[in-house]
Length: 83
Length: 362
Image (cartoon, rainbow over all chains, first blue to last red):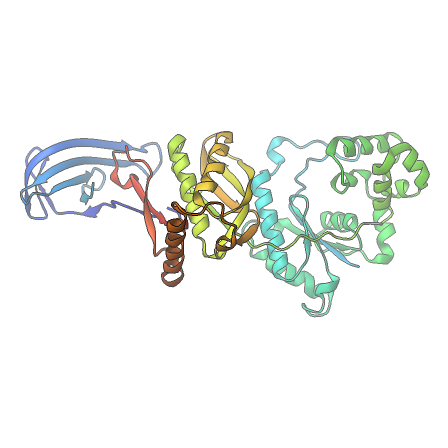
C-alpha cells in the first residue's frame, strides 16, 4: 500500500462461536438470527505468502444488525468486516 | 575552464559494431531507458543541490563546470568532486556505477570518465589525451541524428581516419568538402574545441508513484490513474501552482518500463483536465503494469492567478470549495481531507472495494 492511501473496511478480530456445522451462532456475544449468505474466497494462491483463503458469512444478528464475518482458513481466526 | 562529466554506468546507446566500436551488445546489456532517465534526473538534481549548473541532454550523463563551485567547496577541484560524490551517493542504486571525469571539454571529460573514475585531463595535456581516442567516441558527442553520425564515423574509418588525432590534422576546408557541417563539428571536437555548456534551468521535483495489484487493467487502471492525479495535485510541494505538462510512466510486470509525455495546452491544476488528457494515453501501455508513475514537467502560475474562462454557474462554488480544501490542508496537513475512491466494487473481498485518497483540489 503506497503512503498516503488507506484501505476501507479493514477486517477486525471478532469472537465467534460456531455450531456443529461450522456456521456462527454468536458474534461478540450477540446471537445470530439468520445466515443470509455464505461464500468462499480463495485468491492469489499462486503468490507465495499472499494467499487469501477465507470463508465468509453474511449474518443477521439478534440486535437487528447485518454483519459480515469470515474465518481465515490458514490461521482459523475469525474477523468481522463492514460490508 | 574545467568541465566535470558524471556518467552512470555504460552508455545508454549501444556501441556501434565495427573496428572502433566493438560488437553490438545484446538487448539484455541495454539499460531500461525509462529507469535510466529517472536515474539521470536524480543525478542532475543531486548535482544542482551542490550548486552546479548542470547540462544533461543524454540519458546516463551530466556535465557541469567546476570553476564556479571552487569557492563553495573548499577552493579546489578536489573539494568540488568530493561534494559531487557525496551528493550522488544519496541516489538509490549502485554507487560504484557512477564515474567522474574532468577535462577542459565535454568530449575529453566524457572519455576520461569512461577510462577511469576520477581521471583528470589538464589543459596542457588535452591534445595528447584526445589524439589516440577512437573516432567512435564522436557517436556519443555529435549533435545530430544517429544515422547521420553513424554514416560519418563509418566514412571516417573507411578512409583510415581511426583516431581523433588523425581527424584533427586534416584541413578544415578538406573536411567541409568531404563531410559537410557535421564533419566540421567532428573536427572541432577532435581538436579540443567545444561549445560552452548549456545548463538547464533547475526544476523542482513533483512526482508520485502507485504500486498496482497484479492483473490491474481496464477500469481499475483508470481508477489508479485517477488516484495518482489526486495525489500529485495534493502534494504540498506543488504549493498551489498549475502544471504545464506531465510524464506518465509505468513499470511493466514483464520487466522494463514505458513512459509518455503529455502537454496540457494551457496551465492547469484541475484533476478533471489532467484525467481527461491522461486516460487515453493509458491505451498505449504495451503490457500489464506493476506500478504507475506521474511526474510534473514544469509549473505555471498559481491556480488563483489564472485567467477565468467561465464566470457564473459552478465556477464560483468550485473556487470556494477549492479555497476551503487548500485552507484545511494548509492547517491540518495533506491527509486532513480524504475522499472514498471506489476501486473494485465487484470484488468478493470487502477491503478491496475502496481506498481513502487525498481530496482533489478543485
